[in-house]
Length: 347
Image 1 (cartoon, rainbow, N blue to C red):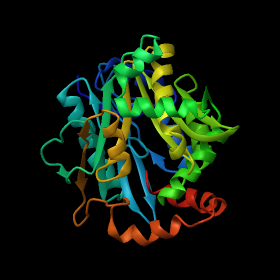
Image 2: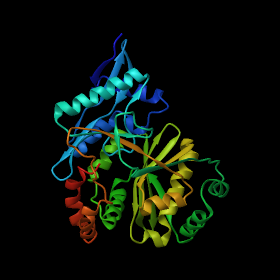
Image 3: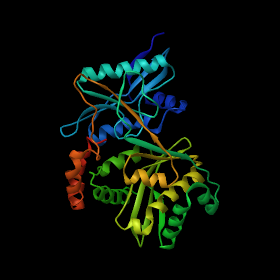
Image 4: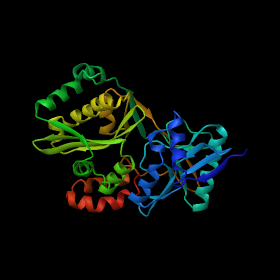
């Protein structure tokens, strides 16, 4: 029987997710709820394509079109996610999905098709020198905090965690979107980046009710660091996080990530800590290396329409330097009002 491609709908979403869970190469970012989150949070059109053969799902490809005046037009798998691309049971299914994606790009008029792959790109795809790296490593947690800390994090980070607790830091694990967004908004403003709207975090928590938690570190009743983590199979993925200006002097980030690791291992049986992607040459890149993680280049690849170029919407681009410098000086209320309009195109 031939392979048929069709778009996922509400009725086929359970079959989509069952296929994702059955494939070891699939990631949290291939799950179907992301389609609704992207549409409702940012207004982008989604085109989640599934391959079927003999009535069974044999491949999936999440796609969303991210189109804004400021940052261009890209059909990506997948915006606001670290990993993407096809997940297929056969080379034939993968090719059928990729051919569908190229045809869709041509039909809707988007100049760029982007796959955010872990693996190397297929022949014929354009690539740029690695910009993003992912950081993942196994963890082993037994319930003995002292031994677990020694087993999982380097000596310098262990010392910082202990300092943080001595400074009176404590942590909570819940779904506190207000604390998360307040800390995250200040953190990204200080880095010169626009903030996501609070509704995006709410939508993520509603889409993955049993697969998320918010770890917040508190000092004297104030949140000083907070991170939204996801859970998938035996993995924990601290995804959106940050700290206030005082967090660094309190070692709050070190306490926060240790608490994520400790709780994920003890309460959910996590065996892999996925620290997410960071750009080379940034403080976040160096921070994750210092935690004992080895950077792995992400193989983002492209199929371009004639005359199109690979997008370069990242803070390392010199043309954004003045914008970043000015953004760091904005009052937080102003940044929180303007930021969500800009960040739609920076997924």
